[in-house]
Image (tube, rainbow over all chains, first blue to last red; front, top):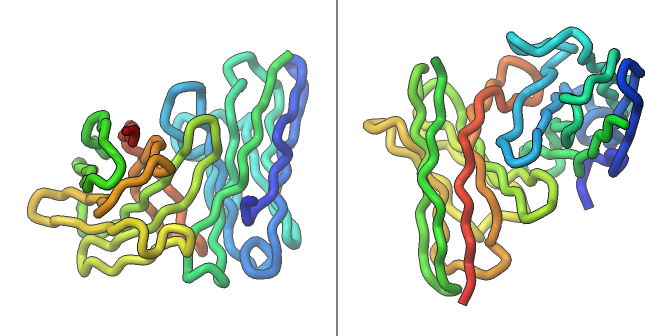
Length: 112
Length: 121
């Protein structure tokens, strides 16, 4: 059971907009800690997608955006493309877990 | 160019010991934390722990405390993850990543390619 809860799967057609939620608690997201997002393509290492207050590393398209409210965060992907099919993970920090980072369980995005 | 290069595939027997490595280059190794992440077959990412090479300050996720040891050698810009007695349940891909604490929770901005560990009798 992950500290951060994500839906196991989401799907969308090319060109559509999809969102992936990440729900935490008062000891992590709700405490004001930033939420980051990673993309993992099949058979590859995870890649940083969104960090901090909706920042994108160089090379990440602006079709990807992040937001946070209360004890939850969301990743939005607009103009869905076939190459976006991957696993997506949220990550934050939890003050109740020996000062440790925490991940969500991951969400499989299928492009129909 | 920032790079993290990990040691190769490992196949070990239960009870054996192991130390895998992660060599950083292209940045000041001592100034950034290094994190380790586990991914069991077909499963999600799990936070193992982190080390600050400058002073070897280390924190572990409660699930991994006492199960593994994280260390670093600044003279060769390398971090390590080690086990004293492997179990079949340690079978997984292990990633190292650079941790950037420029925000409130720290994000993993550069990742190694992963080390695949298989523990089987």
